[in-house]
Each structure stands twice: as C-alpha cells, then as structure tokens.
Image (cartoon, rainbow, N blue to C red; front, side, top):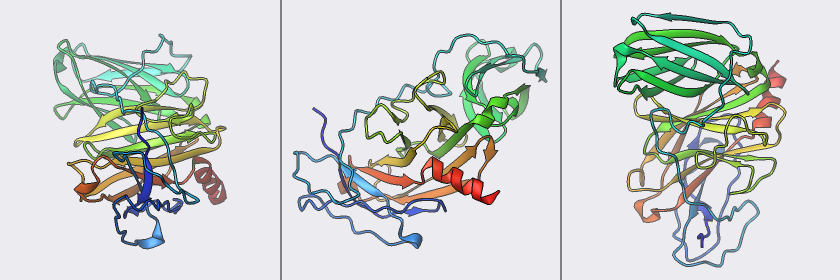
Length: 320
C-alpha cells in the first residue's frame, strides 16, 4: 500500500515573475516543523512527507494529500527516455545536410506533433561524448562503438538547425522546417542532476497520479491523443532537462516542481530554471531557488507551484 504524502511549509525563493504564491500547510502536531524564511513576494513552496504511520491530518484550504507512485524513471542512455516511434518521412519539408567529418551523415525527419527524429552516423566519432544543439536547446549524448546515435528532439522553432559536436569540433549539421510548432506550447525545466527536482504537469484538473498527471515517471509519447507529453535529456555541465509539450488549445494546465529531500540536497539550496516557448515564441528564462529542509526531513517532498500554462498565454497576449 502506498503511503500518504502530507503537506507542510518550507522556505524557498521562486524568481518566476508569473508564479502563483499559494501557501500550503499541515496542522498535524506529530510532524516536524520547519520554520520558513520569508522572501520577496512571499512565495513559498511546500513539503510533502511520507510518515512511518498513517497520520490523522486536518487539511487547510490549499493542502494537497495524495498517494505517490514509486519513481520509476527509465535508465538514461544519453538522451533520456526516448519512445520508439514509427518511421516517418520528411512530410515535404526541405532538409539540407553539411558535415566536417568524412562520411558522416545527420538525417532528420518529422515526427508529429512537433518532434524531430535525429539519426547520426559518424565513423570519426566512435564512443564519443556528443553535444547536440537545436537553437536554444542543448543536450549531451554519446555515440556507440560504430559512431551512431539516434534520438528524438522537440522542434524548438519553425526553422530548425540541428548541429552535433564531438570533442569541441563540429561533426554534422542539418536543417528541417517544422511549421506546426506554432500550434504547440512548451515548458523546459533544467536543474543539476542529483537535485531531485522534477517538473510535474496536471492537465484538465487532474490530481496526483491521475490520467492527466505528466512527469518523467509517466511521460506519454509524442503520438499521444490524450494531451501533452514529456521528454527527458541529459544536459551540459551535469544537468538534466525535462521538456513538456502540449497543444496550445489544451486548458487548464497546472504545473509545479517537486523535489525529494535526500542526503545529497538536505540543508542546501537547490537551483534550476524554467523557460516557456509559447506557440513557437521563446519567453525569458526564469531561475528558481529552493532552500531544502534539514536532513531530518529525508524522504519528504517539496511541492513548489508554478503559474498555469494558460496564465502565461494570457500575459503573452496582453503584451502584444
């Protein structure tokens, strides 16, 4: 049986200008109390505990109480959890390839909605660390013993230039047009690996562990008919990247960051960033800082609210 998660208050700083500042709190006297420090905007995250015994908890107005599934994240093979997709053609989109590596090739194909299948073959880069960049998105990967790498990337703009570097030198570059990105919204979350911070999405009023709860543990695939999906990657400088994609017509979409308290992060400040791409247009990067509680809170979870995706769209429309 899954244990209940109970919400209490913990200190943190959220620098996203569009964030909602809801405060959640538990009044269970048996739980340890973490005294918060108040920051600008009075925006505070929350912490969800897994007690040894099922507690009797009186819920306040904004308290969340739910049963978390175990976090079963697929083993990272260089680009994270990559779904197996059917073969697709270029759909009539122009594609050009250049390479500075003899006999290297970089093939791109469109995988609706708004994803790009990337296949690298580079005999000069066998068993090599790769930097793969698509405009504002940069991920880390590794080629196999024959110099091959294959993965799925989110198309970040209408005209995509995907380049691959190995050992600081360019290997191959290719271009692909993906006009359908203007019908998609994206949220890109980046944090240090080991911070245990993850992006959680709740579509159409879904609750924790519901059918509309999207995370690295339940990511869906780009061909889902249900709504949005998530892809996970290794980033540069020992970071992790999580990218959520949804149709611009999907609403409401509630978002939050969750972070488990571990020996690696307890008593420390963990940092990350959130960036949104609304209908193919980049929004500013917004940093996040959360002061994790002491190591006495091991196994508990920080729950930190972000502004809803439709709120960000309303603000974007108001600025135009």
